[in-house]
Amino acid sequence: MKKILLSLSILSLLLFISCGSDDGPTVNNQITVGDQTFDITNGGFIDLGESEGTRQGVFALADADISITSTPSFSVGSSSSFRIVLNLVALGSTLSSGTYTEGDVLSPDAGRVFFVSLLDADGTSYTVDSGSVEFSGTDPNFTMSFNLTLNGGTKMTGGFSGEFATAD
Image (cartoon, rainbow, N blue to C red; front, side, top):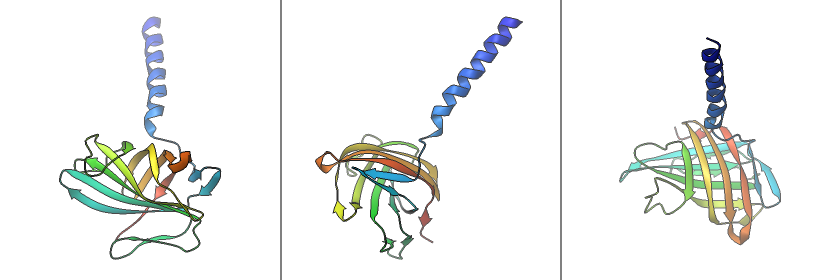
């Protein structure tokens, strides 16, 4: 009986430890670009829907107010010191949780890809050379974390978790 209880205790502990890593990335609502760190205060999300077997969503992050205009597009407050607009594309009918790698939206054979349509920090615009975005959640609450290499070898890390502004 002691062996059974000991085995169950060890199994329970292993399950508890292994489940902790499945909870998604831990983020601190900050983003670091090179040696500059910014607090992310707001996010925005536009669901572009399903098309040709993929689902696409556009996300914006900034340290200022973000609203969705009727076009739809994002409007970011003029006081922002940075803003990021990126697209996530997944095969299928939903933006599934997981790792999105930098890629071409026209050939998302890897299953989940992202591309950055704007990355601007303190007046400097960047492009993404490589990296990944971890994504989870459901509209309007999402968690995203970044580990990217930008043009010129600049690193961008960080993430945001919270409620995103959405189109009405």
